[in-house]
Length: 146
Image (cartoon, rainbow, N blue to C red):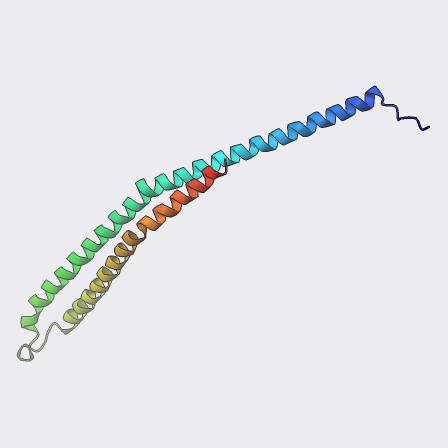
């Protein structure tokens, strides 16, 4: 008959210490995961709040003011061209050819910039709800990690 191995008190103490240490590591990992999840939730919520309250309104204001400025610039250049037209006759020798041409180019540049700003503004407004939805989904995903 074989004898059962004898358990020494030191060996039991070592096993008990190892078990407690392993349990503490598991709890620490769970606590770290909960902390990380809370941080992800907070980051997603802040990203959403920042977009809704700061980034989107600021971008709209910027685009609208630049568009208004481009429209005013184009209107001013059109008025300037109308003022120059009486002097752009063959009988007067066309003294303002360079001025008129540079004004026409500036008018074209202002018109193109105005059109681009309108397109940017429309794209920003169209994508606003998609961006909001994306940020809400990121927040929900972070909350689901709890």
